[in-house]
Image 1 (tube, rainbow, N blue to C red):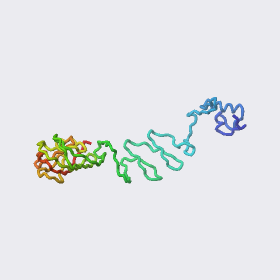
Image 2: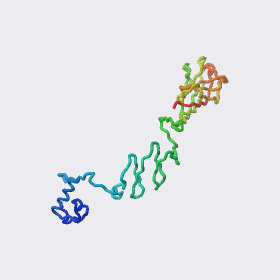
Image 3: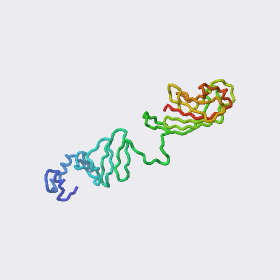
Image 4: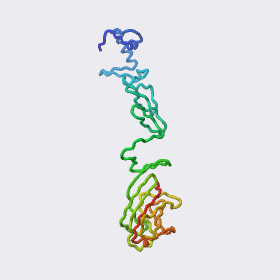
Length: 261
């Protein structure tokens, strides 16, 4: 390796404990020997390796020099630009806080209660498979769809003209249906099944609905059966109605209930 006869870099001079300049020859050899002892090695192939602990920069290297300009970080910190050539650490926050944008040319920040100022044309999208939340103030589901009312009385009846729709908001389900009973003399109590979600368990069957149209005068109301996907037509006195009573009748109704999730 050929170097100038006189090395005038003060750093090199300090490497051998002196000041001023280094003369070529013995002093040059001593300079490299001390570097080797301090963490610099040269392999037989000429590859130079510096120990990572050899250099300490104080203050830290700036961004233009290839550094961050930040002396230390805490686990979870994020690096954000504070200017064209400066960076800063955005410190980690408590669990549950959300990183929000404060607009262009403004540093982002964490918030306990972020505000959504713009919603896309698609609206608020929930996952296809609900991720239930135990929070009383957390909306964790929204779904729209169709369902097929079926005979759940055990008589294996087949309804005709069947139509069913529902909307689910959180645990609240609003289901509607239109169906016609076949001609039957079966004396079993009428039970309509196939609800899109299981009705939440309660001490009594408190969820129910009403008929929007019907051809059977005694059919007055409907009650959802807790912890099931069935609904029972009842008279105004709360008595069951048989399949035979509803033979050939058309029922249109709306049911509101709380789902299990």
